[in-house]
Amino acid sequence: MMIARIVVGLALVGLVLPSMPAQAADLDKAHKLSVEHCEKCHGKTGKGDGELLKRLKADVKPVDWTSKTAMAKWTDADLAKIIKVGGKSAGRSRVMPSFGEKFSDADIANLVAYIRTLAK
Ligand code: HEC
Image 1 (cartoon, rainbow, N blue to C red):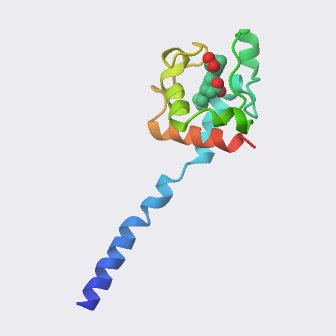
Image 2 (cartoon, rainbow, N blue to C red):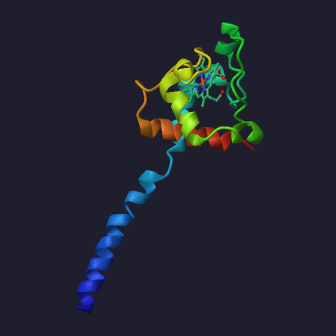
Image 3 (cartoon, helix red, strand yellow):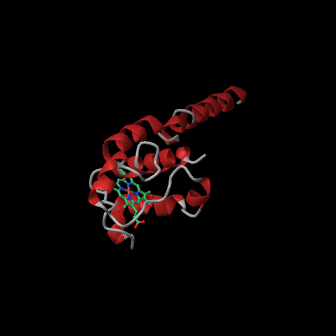
């Protein structure tokens, strides 16, 4: 009886533990996606001063991702939404593209987690 309980207990631990790292954000992957797809507008450090944005002469300024105060106004859900559906569908500037076709929801969640690491 005792042994059976230990065996069941270990099996449960075995089920729970391997799934934990998968839930942690893959910040390395998000960083790579950001370098490739986001920095040109949001800038290397996330300040919103990317070259493409300057060239577009867009009269809209993205939020400074390095500012804790500015970022505090955004929920993770709002950040994920604008990345997924784009600025236009989120009721903001159409200059912000939609990435819902390109990236999985997991990639977008990783990007949100990555963006959060930039605010100091
Ligand atoms: C062509 C330029 C451009 C690219 C590329 C771009 N963005 Fe944006 N993004 C913007 C602009 C402009 C805004 C501001 C929209 C507004 O406030 O009306 C914005 C807004 C956002 C916001 C809302 C908060 C903020 O910064 O204003 C998030 C989050 C965001 N972008 C994430 C991303 C991610 C992640 C990528 C790459 C996968 C990306 N963006 C690529 C231009 C861009």
